[in-house]
Image (tube, rainbow, N blue to C red; front, side, top):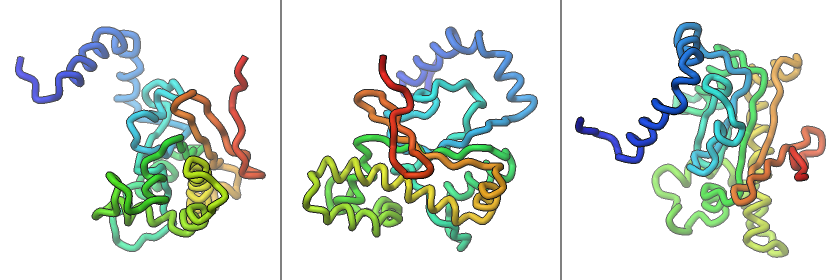
Amino acid sequence: MQSFLPDHLVTGYQSFLEKRLPGERQRFRQLAQSGQEPKTMVIACCDSRTAPETIFDTAPGEIFVVRNVANLVPPYEPDGEYHSTSAALEFAVHALKVEHVVILGHGGCGGIHAALSPSAEPLSPGDFIGKWMSLLDPVAKAVGSNELMTARERQAALERIAIRHSIANLRTFPAIKALEDEGKLSLHGAWVDIASGELWAMDPGSGDFQRTVEEG
């Protein structure tokens, strides 16, 4: 049979059919019949190395995932422009009634690198990336101008600052702020180190990041 998809995707799907689907067939049927009811929304980077479903080892239907460059949340601006992340937030909060929203950042983020070095290849401003990453302009300029830090330190710092920045933007959405104030919605920040697999979570009080699980 002729395939119109890349071979490695067809091979992966065949493996899914043979190994995973038999054990989860009932779950898929239930999800198809009753719909999804995830309790958590994860806003993650579209980087291929940081799939939330893999990092959190979740089953189908457990988390509602939105991915964009550098896991950013724009401020509340219903201005008639296209806002896919904001639309997904609206759906998650109003329709799915999620109880948690997690901003998941990661080490070595290309979008963050672009924010710090907007003219660097291959992530030059272009038509879309520069505009999107301009969401971080104020904090990127502050971090980028710190000559006491190395380039790697500035990168790591902005990756985590960007998470706090996105959480602040979440609170500009009236419905999200109201639900958080009522104790019906919790906002979280997390950062994963791709090389080590370590997951760091943000302390909501101090904003500091701490390892979620200590080794050993």
